[in-house]
Length: 132
Image 1 (tube, rainbow, N blue to C red):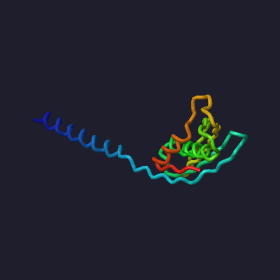
Image 2: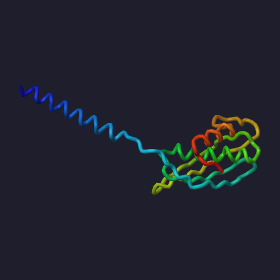
Image 3: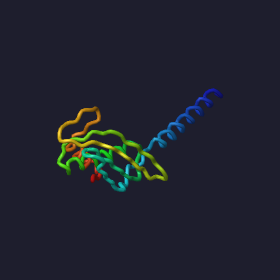
Image 4: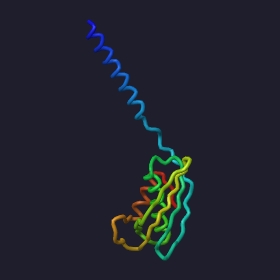
């Protein structure tokens, strides 16, 4: 009889533990606050984007914001493509800052991290990410 009671208690503890684990996995809704983009033309086709946002889940959200800015900037300048060179991101007190550099070009540039500005800008609109 004692073993049955012990097994029941272990089973209850496991059930409670599973409930706790599930409640910890609940994700909060993604509600970003986009704080604006500063754009600097560095040299010819080399452009620097400084973005700020709150509510980012990870560095990827900040990268996406900078990429959207680069795509729109390329389109504004009459170019169809951009190539990502680098992005640095830091977070302090809930404010995320991204510093990204892209080249823009009328034709698909060489390199691995190229973007089609129209495709990216369309995705940004669909996802509610503001652009330049």
